[in-house]
Image 1 (cartoon, helix red, strand yellow):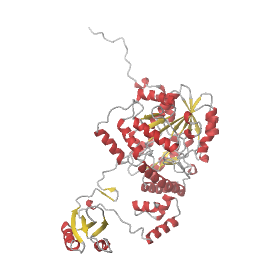
Image 2 (cartoon, chains in turn yellow, blue; image 1 turned 180 degrees about the vertical axis):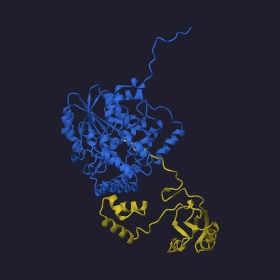
Image 3 (tube, chains in turn brown, blue; image 1 turned 120 degrees about the horizontal axis):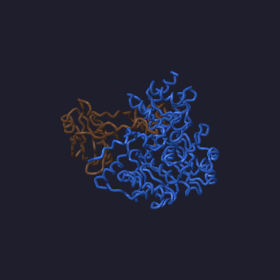
Image 4 (tube, one colour; image 1 turned 90 degrees about the vertical axis):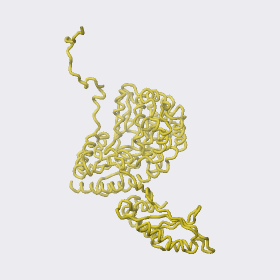
Length: 159
Length: 399
């Protein structure tokens, strides 16, 4: 696994000079490699993990499970890409099991999302059924436990 | 009528008079003072902690919780859970090519600390000497003294990257020398011993018929090549007692699980002492240790990798800001020199703490040869290490 990517996947704010120090490599070399990874589309975006539940005004998230009719030639791609274009949609994944696509949607209210599904997703040609699961509480996102209490302390000095 | 005790003069109770002389004479740990200072200070960054900053991996904690739910709360055999001894035997065989019979040659202890004490108590007679390389972990000399033995310290030096030199050992041997203590990767220096360093020692050891007591608790945290134990040298296994544990490798300090590997008669003797003092290591901790040894390798390697990243960043940072530091190849300590700054290590540490709120441990705590150095633990988050480097740099510019 690429060590630079490992570090960035944990901390998008890590600068090339910090990464260079951690890896014991020249900064210019690290900066160049990061640029190449960006240009090649391996690094797509530097994101921040936010615990929205800590805020008074939050978003509503839902997971949609869709059954989709398989198209000749395009398979699931055409429908999936059409869904992905909506700005309300955070992720679109082809999954195994009872359903075909798993879609994460973000909206301002449950009503917003319900209308969005009814007006934009369900009528799409190829979408045979939808099942909307509203997310009630998020316990862990991107490997971070959001409900974690204060970490236990170590003794300040030990031999 | 009850007789009065008028005739007996009652002296005031003085507990001091009832103390063992060795214990009485034992100086308090040099760390204590810093502990008190740091504890009272808000916003201090401590690089003085000799344990992982990671919490024990969840699957290990979960295995322990499950064992408690299942009612596994009894004593184990004196030597420890058979399954744990078997998995240790298997691991040591596959990783180091050393064979230890899980029934006769492995003892589970309450941390490596107990194992160190047992090793001295089971092998030393009053007046026997043990060669102890310095600077070193603070418990060895007191443990030797408690058995009536004598700790003969041998300094290690920066010019050798704090590796123990065979000629220094040879010079310290006399007709009372019984054992050589090895503690590599080393706390506080971060030094390791290579195979060829150990081979040089082997000649002295054999010539003087010494027992080797090898504390290898940091063995898994070796960053260049893999750890070599003295027991792996040809013909040396039977005269070596390996002391190891899961505290540092698996972030399990508070569980107190260690183990001893050695010759059946030595392990038998240590088991005798263990049986009459500890009886058995805590059962729930042994269950957790079993889980960690069977399924904890992924997390162990992740933690080691993180220490290695920090090590590079921190050591190059120390050198950049003007604290000369050789490359530590093991454990999680950097041991920079402060000699160029005209302060003793204790003065330096105390002023750094008071003026910039960074806690380090003066090298002198670990023996006179540690004077002029600081022990800085990088078992601390990257953010804190970066902040500590900034603060130390400001401190240096004020000198």
